[in-house]
Image (cartoon, rainbow, N blue to C red; front, top):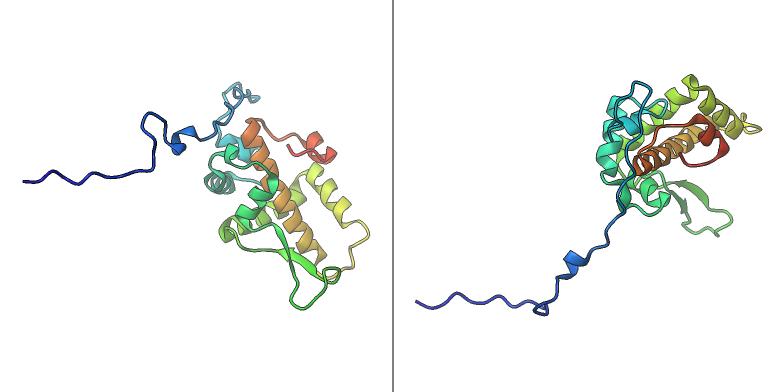
Length: 180
């Protein structure tokens, strides 16, 4: 019987593999306490946003997974297909119309838009933001749906930020233009 063949690798003996040297993310801050004095679970974080129920929160949690794997909000928006791309077929860049790419998770995008519609009707802080976005543009064709999509993108970024910091939704920060 002959010995089994040896497997050659490009690894230098005595050094760790490149996979072992992956960058480590900082540990998340300790969980905050809710009004009911229970510890804040990661599932409860996206659900603290208005309009986001348990199903949408689970979808956001499943889509984002580890919030520390994203370095920028554009990466989170691209995950759901809510990032903007311009259709430029034969047009100059000043005439190109920006639209959402729809390259991401369609079910997540659908759920977030419906959560944005509910939030815009029920939450006073989000309703104020929504009417501020619509100001002076009420007569444009399809502008309400475009603003719902914009609000859905903002709610996704807010949920990502809340998951990253393990905090709950704060309407004052939302209206001030800060992420969380």
